[in-house]
Image 1 (spheres, rainbow, N blue to C red):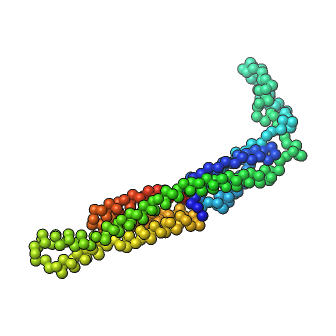
Image 2: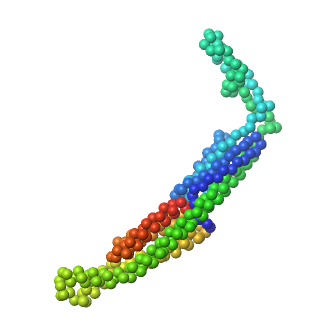
Image 3: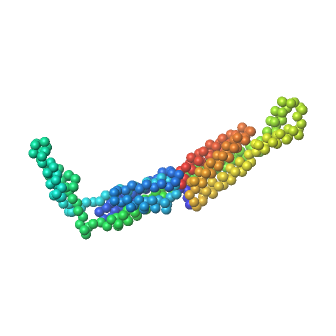
Length: 293
């Protein structure tokens, strides 16, 4: 499974009989999968199609599915609702009689709400179930388009993440090279410090014992081994068959934990420098991982 991002957009248009519509599906980053459906009154049942479709295709992200629909009115079926028109005339007649308002025009009366009644002929009435089924197909197509857009984002993220992991591996190797010389440096430092304090009285045996104890405390081999192991795990996740975002996010925390410990144990300037470079690269890796599904 290729890496998938969490941001994208897709639009699909459709029609059925007198109905026409457009479906827009978009998503942004999110820790979990959240789907919102917005549609015209009377089509609330399509909310389930949007949610089920999103759940079948995605695991994370905040999704919005927006359905805009309109129905073409048949002019031949338009009728004047006389009852409503007479109520308007009756309500306005006192004002016309006193001269407060001018006599209403025909176009003004026809524009009043409810005066024109567009009625469907029985043989021309749309089957709402068929319309909703066609709209559900458009929703599925929009979600498919959104998935493609998210995969495209994942394809753009893949080389960035791979480059960061390669850099972490390189810095880990450099740190291991520097760490190999740390015990000897610690022994030399302790020997010099002890000589300054008590002169030549310090025995070589004591110097070796104390330096060895310090070297154990400053040993970073476990941290380096775990960093190497995390590098292998990151590559496996990025090339695996499951959504990797959550696991990569957790792995970035483990990367940072080892880098922090490496820096705290470092007794060498060069090793500390590599540790700080590791932390900066890991942070860049973590920021990009936030975009992965």
